[in-house]
Length: 337
Image 1 (tube, helix red, strand yellow):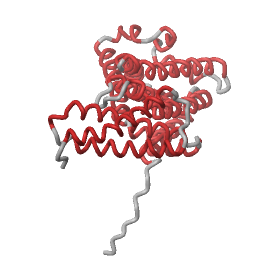
Image 2 (cartoon, one colour):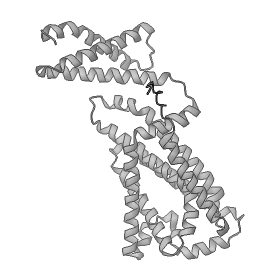
Image 3 (cartoon, rainbow, N blue to C red):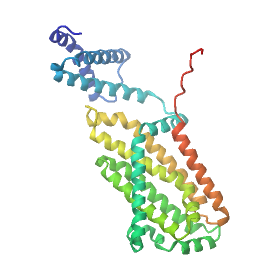
Image 4 (tube, rainbow, N blue to C red):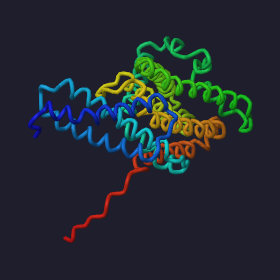
């Protein structure tokens, strides 16, 4: 317990001012690397000021000083972790197998919200088409006008087409890849608008999928639909959801809930996670594009079971990868019984 609060503050303020001075120096010279002695002093001051903050929290009358110390400690914490992160060399395999899935799980709530918004949009699109089938053309964008065709007619034409008819299939595949890459990027960057347009984009693209799924199922083309969408969609849709996840992480950082850090400092704390999510989504889109070009657009009924199985295995493997990889092993038990 502190017997004389005023005397304690007067004694410790020298250390607080010193820490604040080091933080100002680092803010003014962000590319500067402090010498070892300065870094050690910085860490000592961070620990001391943190301890002072804990002691002062027991005194309700020192609310203003407590708020000052909270901000100081938060800034020092951010600077320590930011610097430590920058010194770690980039190892691609370690990033892929550890950092990416661990980062994904750390922001799982944002992913769940992204995924949920998309499928709520899909349910809305399917319900709207069920209530008024004539509204189908209102949901299909101009670049996908071919989807306005009756599904059974398209399936009949596709299945009669030669297996090596590359031009039309690859043009369509490139069109879809471009569209989904744009969607993923937009769901990320619109997070800077406090996430409102991120959710709108996810919902809108969900309605398109919902309309297509309902249209093909009602027309009895469910097998064709699964064989067409599942091989590449098992990676493509999760990439879009991760794009929305990154956008929602940005939105939460914009709001700054639960922290006294300034906006630049808040983004410094999530910068690494955002780059990891963006990189992971990009890899998923690259693989989805390859699969779409060389497998999804070939519509031979003999291959349907294999294509569906391939997509299902991919989806299960991705789910296991994101759920289990990168977890720290539990320490061995020392119990003797």
